Image (cartoon, rainbow, N blue to C red):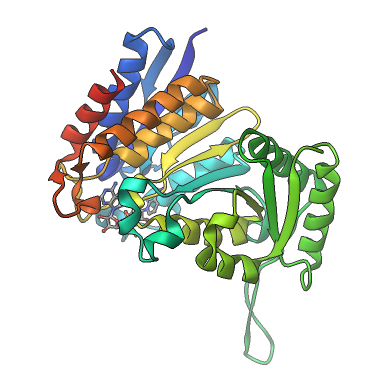
Length: 357
Ligand code: NAD
């Protein structure tokens, strides 16, 4: 059955890395491994320049109609002085909200070929393969009341509110249990149940959901301990499930264990939509220079085949091809090591396509 893929290259290196992702899609199509209907749209600063808004209505409509959205990156110096409401980043937050993407998957995997890239000792990070499942559409980033008010005595008061409803916890917890079932069968839920009632509810609800997944070993950890354990002994983790705020912080911490921002993909899933993107931004400092690492984008394509298009064998094949080009010693500037061969964005994409074959 034909699947519809909506491409949103966005700004900066988003354009360059998307071109390499398209080569992978074309290869998969060419081999008859999938039938894809590919369309492309505007988001971010590029969309603002052409339409006056970082998230045109047509982009939202097309993204909603697609089976999966592939996004490059948004943002750049050019748009930094714009009103907050029309900044490129509003396009990204807006599309996540419009598609009701509540489950964010952030794998942090250390490629053996790049174990030296981490700031931690290679023996600590070797073999890391963590999946952080972050609740993405609720919690303190959205809870009411929020804001800053001036009190009668002249002091200011700033408020944000952590709010979770049980159904919001249940739906993301189910995703995490299912993912753990496809991996090692271990799930660690991270909260602060000792001091935050809202996350006490989180913990109780996750335990209740766990009753439906008897094959999964569920554990719990307070977030402060989890932050320490991720540095002390990261290999103890397989799947980590956590709230929006804690997930924001822990997923960045986990990804930096790997030491290479240009290698890390992500997925944001809803019940009807899915969006795949590298974790990095538009890298204005190297945009247009042809040196950006396209592998995070290409690995996001692999995640799309695994989680939305239900073609795990295609995903495996793409991942294996990435390993092969690293084994062959090819490196973009951000992951360059002594004795390796430095290549640009296009050459790296071409090498992955060649390795696929
Ligand atoms: P960034 O991730 O764009 O760049 C951080 C550093 O990593 C830069 O030195 C950059 O050159 C490097 N880098 C990032 N991706 C790379 C790649 N694929 N290959 C090689 N090097 C890479 O973060 P930033 O500089 O803080 O933000 C730049 C712009 O991106 C801002 O406008 C920001 O708002 C936006 N941003 C967008 C997203 C997104 O679209 N999801 C995420 C983060 C930041």
